[in-house]
Image (cartoon, rainbow over all chains, first blue to last red; front, top):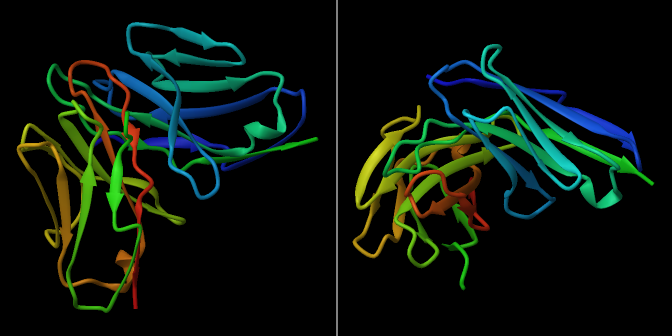
Length: 115
Length: 113
């Protein structure tokens, strides 16, 4: 089955710096790659996602890149702010026409942004 | 619009007992998935239901089961509880049509003593 590896497990940056989190997946049939942010004691929330037919997607300070050949995708956060501090999870899934499919998650990256 | 609702929020059970958790998806969502979250293993997929049918199943023992009702509400059951079943159980719902966002509930914190 699908396996998702995520690195690093912890990341500490200064406010205003950029943060990059990387994930690799094993199943070449996976076609949907969301990123979730989970603040302490709260539910995971989708921050950005990308489909396999797209190489890059950007939403304000957040961007995701996908390399299908290498089977890896990355989250880039620019101009980090203290409120970006949280645990970030990448995931991979095979979505078909009528079903959500299953999300296979990486182990998470704890991002700390120091003021 | 109400979000995904999970009940109860907290549960304490004894080893060997069974437990049932409930998930009410966002209105109009037909797909519900369940995940187990632990500090050591992260978020692990349990199973997914769409229109009352189990579509996918993760790598968990048969003690973990679930079902979905005609109104899309879902329940998961864990029988013969073990200490290692202590975790946050999250459900997520989505429209289930194509690429749509999965919305998570607040989770049920299960503690097995």
